[in-house]
Figure (cartoon, helix red, strand yellow):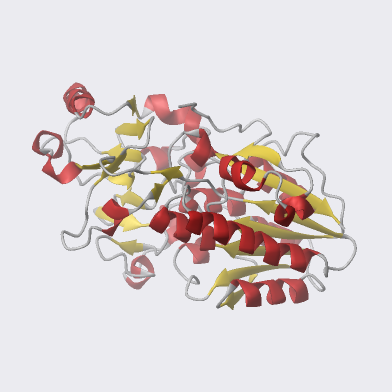
Length: 386
């Protein structure tokens, strides 16, 4: 299978963030989109982030379908690595690469707490209680990244932003990455679109996050009929919204990642690999397709590489210094949190550590992401100037 690295030089979601920030007067040390991609021309931006809308499957299922024609020309971007929601959304809102903001997966090691943290809920594992870090007196801005969001910097320049999220997603990671924006919550895609159509009238940036397609793929897989139906129906709904937006609006459609179809037998249960577990100082973390391992001693790297190779699955195995380029460069703060060894499957394998012995639902997912395959790394970019 083809491997795809992040194109941080001008063709990734990091660069899209920089271009949107530039529209709002935000300066950055990072490059914006390349000239052939950066086509923002309106007086306001409606940014729609469709979780799980991979470029490969969009073109495969809807390359010629009527429901997608309103998208116009769909360009190919890369997401960041790891290609997982918490990492990508933080990059999009902060305008910096993963190696700078330190959110390198759904589960991360946080040395201050002495354990692992769910970055979506900002709660200690295994429960991952929403806002658990804050309840214990920790500030996620100190733990992860204390820089400004693009919304805060835009506000300082006189530009107002609204972020529209599913009900229940405020708090947690949202408190870190949406500072400076007004938050509105929705209960269905339909009221999200109504909220968006109203919000564009009085704001310079309206950002809508829609996780529907990601959920469907985890349950049924990206190759399923269930996903194809959900994709077409969502495109239909979005297309109807676009027709009623005011002139001088630029609509930006993109995604955080795609997904890889996972088959029976692809899941590896790390708990039963005693030799691996005995070499670690803490449970495996990160993602099943971008696994991070903290060694009990750095001298154990060779041992761990040998154990991972013995699993019999095709894996890229990197140490911390070898992974830097994929993360866009690494700060000292990030280096203290990331794994000493990383394992990235190059087929549909998933490396799973169950944090709860009575909860194995992740073992049953038929769609996964976070790795470097084209299906998960390539994302669409459609820019429509009304």
